[in-house]
Length: 209
Image 1 (cartoon, rainbow, N blue to C red):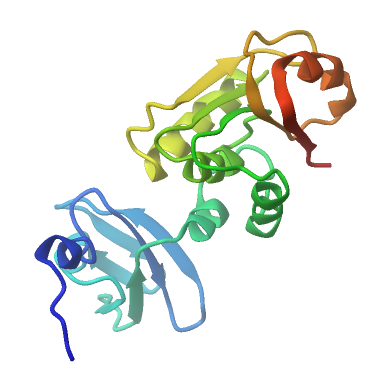
Image 2: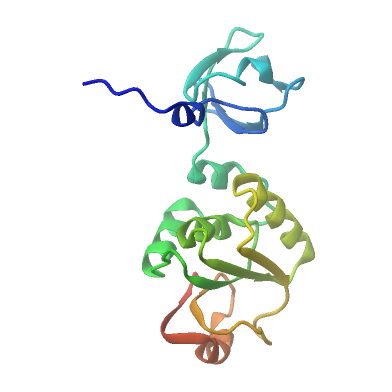
């Protein structure tokens, strides 16, 4: 028996002003953009007004001025990580999945992360801990922190449970009663003594090398 979806559920499957959209052409090339009325997508395959996508359902087909058909989908977290702007190499989705699994990142967890990088892992950690969890993320580079903040808020707007800190966790960090310490650093062993004091009994220390 067919059951009609609630209106709010249907609306969530329609592109709106400010949404991210991932365009895929027939050769598999991908273009990510944020939809804004009055703006257009430009490439070698032609132009496409954002208004041609806004109001349409996810998975719709659109046509550029050059006659090229594009598939417009809502980017997944993996899509966003691969396409987002970055200063340095990001942790790829296959490794993000392993970190979240082996780190046993659970809803409500308090997690310390370092270094933040471009924010790929931070985004996954935020999703995993949910609204009741907390992420504190450290990096030593101001330019990295600025880039990460933009990327994170592009995909996870309004994340009040995230604190970004400029600092060196090799030397110190003030957080205590941590459930998890997740590191993407060249010398994670330097953090072991500090993590031993900061983690709750049974907490997990995980480093990506």
